Length: 113
Length: 115
Image (cartoon, rainbow over all chains, first blue to last red; front, side):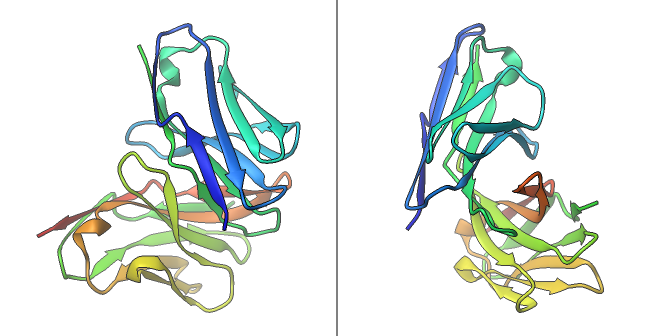
């Protein structure tokens, strides 16, 4: 069966520090991968998606970047964190075909001080 | 354009009573629809999905949803609420955009279950 792992579960970082969040998927090949942010009391905002190794698309301009160095690894990064980067970050994977649901990791709670 | 409206931001029920979470969608073609549940500080878990097969869809944990094209609705129901059902629920429509499945999320319904 397929599983998705996200770490760390919680992270407290000072403003201006770098960020690296990692997500890995097991039990499937060539998945679509996604990074979302969920601000407190608000819905999910799609940040990045990837349909293959090295292929990254950004939904909104922001202080973050994403990379996919391997088929089942998706990394969210920042060189300098802003206060507004605080939130709950979720990684998800989905199948390549149409109408496939997405399956989410347990998320990372990021607090910027 | 595809969109999802969850008609209630909060629903409160007593344990053992029925649950109804309402969702209306807008889609220019036959949609794929999902319900997800999110417990505090957790990711989203897929409850069930509709992809144009049976209109009554059964999911996990006793939940089910009925697709009604004439009403553009996809309401989530459960006959008897458990305390563990307290969570946030998202109704979601899927569309193909730029070669991937883009999910359009409703604003969410927070379900409270009282003893």
